[in-house]
Length: 169
Image 1 (cartoon, one colour):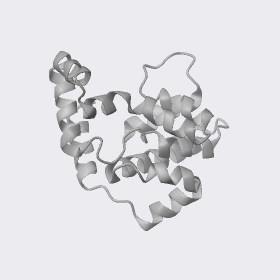
Image 2 (cartoon, rainbow, N blue to C red):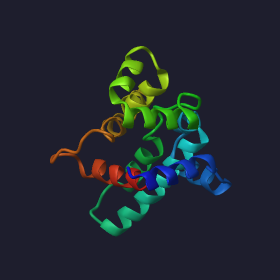
Image 3 (cartoon, helix red, strand yellow):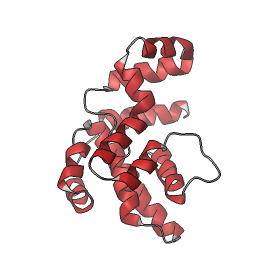
Image 4 (cartoon, rainbow, N blue to C red):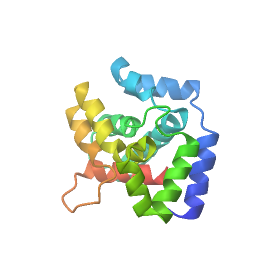
């Protein structure tokens, strides 16, 4: 991500809000059990997941390839549930991004020595997939687990759309 992209991401994180309308959108697309893990994320991550879901809606309308829109919206809303509120604060994320970018070997040592923020940052996709799998969302778990993995030619179309929407937000 570019420097400008990171600055935009920071501004979005510190100004993040979930509106009443957003709450209605979440209720319309997630069950009570799914909402429980959604609302366990920080407000910044909730807002990011909402923007990702809104982008999915736009992409699905533009693409018209017959994808399961509800499935993709659910994936978008839940794709970062591996990061619970408090796991990775805004300051923590700034630290993680900087140390991972400018001192990757040092970051690796810190993570191996138990730095929770680095661990969550690097493994939130797998952690989130485990969470959604525990509540019976097996198909969603497969997509969420791979949303930060390097693209492969045989990736499902839904995964490609989720990555695209996530990267835009």
